[in-house]
Image 1 (tube, rainbow, N blue to C red):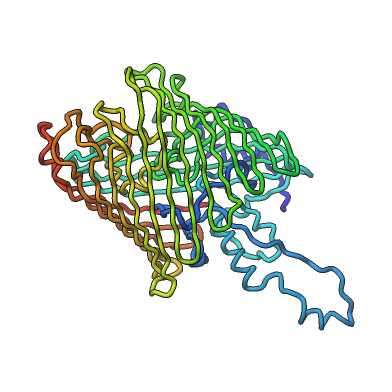
Image 2 (cartoon, one colour):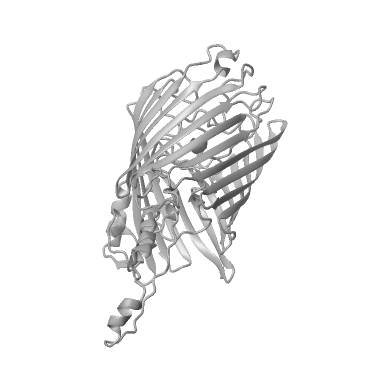
Length: 539
């Protein structure tokens, strides 16, 4: 721990970087995360990696390079030694900073930044074995008096995108190239072990485009998170916390609930949450309203929508985890009202070099005046090859989501990270689709990771149409062949420096027969290309 002076000046300087509307309504409470509260993000080796995520060169082959949470052994110290026995004790006593503990420390450093910044973990700074320095550490785990601990931090990301024949949503026949900037700043303050306040702002901008930005590309000086946590119960079986305010949500493999980090903006909600955490279970119960992005004004929640549910993770079995959830998403004042209720479960397993994952969702409710019954599932099997050059990992997946004869009444994917699973060109959402896909990753060195992903897309129901990532239909006229096409995604991710990652990505879409045979006039039917260069710095 460290003590600081002039804390008010430091806080003011951090807030001043944003200025404007987002911080006008904030308190001056300290900032940044250190305690990981509520449901832990499940990001282990069985989860497919996401381009743009960081990885640390110190990660071992047995763990995902994108892991967010690292546990390491406690360090024990002996304070009893005599002059006569010190030499012998030095030979026999365990070295607290031996290679094994140093490796665990490197993992902790590499995994300090999480998918949501309020889950960041900088406890390694208190480890007596740590004597290094990384960008931003001087503003973490700072002490104010006897009870307050604060952190400051953030991230800057810049991405150049070039899109051929798919600027907009889906295949459009339009080309564009542009530059995306995103800055995030956060602050965390903890009082003892029972109170916490967290605030995070974002500034996202798009430059040099020929066409108007997408809704996920611009959000000037706004709030992502602004909440307080209070410990409500602390017993032998676990802890119960309450959270109220603006908050991002991230659960499981992000197939239903995600902040959508690939977007230049990020997804957030207003509401409250109860979080139970014990040795074997993490369980969240929440009620929220989605907060749509208003590019140049303060973002306010959509009062006509609700997103609520319960998400539980069982982690008491060796080498596997289980997720169980119920999620409800409703709209009460749009042109088409809906009420989607989703029951889901996920199983994630790893044993030796083999891995497997299965997730299924059953959905029911109402869509307009019609009954809504739909579903989706994913199943995959993977294997590490630690004895092969570049230690590759191979995954084979099958994704399925139902369609319906009523346009729009198929499975609704809620608030997912589609970009991670349904192709990095973001052509399709998880509705009325079948996707057989194969992923191969390799590590030529500790600082370079290669990812290749091949998708084969088909319509699940020929009487329905394809849908984009916003759940909007490509066309309202069914018909034609059910082959949508194939997509090849390639990424080179380079850990250029500590907490600086540079990605080089290229994707090509081979249009299927659907586009040439569907009766919709002037439906674009050509191939499409996409490439990008992205640099991300955490501090």
